[in-house]
Amino acid sequence: MAKKIKSEPDYPSITIVTPTLNSQNLLPNMLKSVLSQEYPKKVEILIVDGGSKDNTIEIAKNFGAKIIVDTKYGSAQAAMAIGLREAQGELVAYVDTDNILSSKTWLMKMVKPFMFENRDVLVGAQPLWYHYDKSFSGVDRYYSLIGVDDPLAYYSNKRDRLLQTENNWKLPGQVIKNTANYLIVKFNKRTFPTMGCNGFIVNRKIVLNSMCNPEKFFHTDVLLDLLNLDYNTYAMVKTDITHIHAKSIGVYVRKKIRRARDYASTKNLRRYTLTQQSNKKTLPQTLLFALTIFQPAYLAIKNYRKLPDTAWFFHPILFPLVGFSYAFTLPAYLLAAKSSHK
Image (cartoon, rainbow, N blue to C red; front, side, top):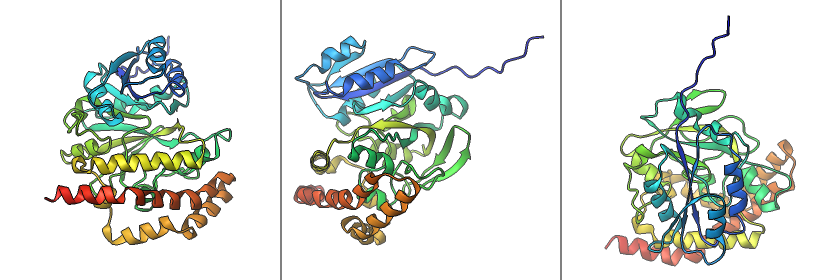
């Protein structure tokens, strides 16, 4: 007598949404990792381009991607909103050009929570770690080890990935279920982390209830919108994703300054800020830790003993640098704050 095989629920349809702008150097490896997926359904690849002048569009066409050229907004955040609205899949995976899916079964692992949990309440799913490889540059190894690139997010406990030395949930939120493949976590406004990109998969039907028009789409803010509608449940999947941060410290600091300026220029449209969601009594301590070398050096030494890699010692260097880089955007930030109260 043949052994009865327990059937799985059907795999959901999925759209990969990727914002691009002059991305010819990074895009091929990302797309190769998507096309290598052993997913039982056809995966839609949707490129939303902000007006590239290089070979980005041609590369995307060669990989069979659907292409939307956004000449009105031109930002990565607006591209995420456009992709969400144009996607055909039940699920939307935000995979950036500097991401690489870490295995051929990555998509299958990431969608499991949507197959076995209540899809009417599950907002999204995210990998628990960044992929770590000793062949990475020092800066990329460091951020794969630490799992976050912002000192304020780290020291205010709003990071959304585990360190490479962590195997158990140590982040905000309440774990309500722990399976072999993923955690189910509920968040509130006080504990909500900086989620929403780098391999983040969303339930399209739910996220369309947020302020997801291109002018107001910011990847963590739309999730906060949903939290205000009592959509508070997420899956943290026990896998990783490659995120290529920068080849050098100088490149990374310039990248942070650019992002900080972008944030300051759109502050009036934002709903989520780390300082509003954090305990403001601990904010001075958070800034002190981030701008001095003492606590960052202690963390680097402690984790080096667990996983020896000299990249840990970027921690007492990069965190203060990032903090000081914010000073360049402080005037613009204060000006935006002043105008918002008029």
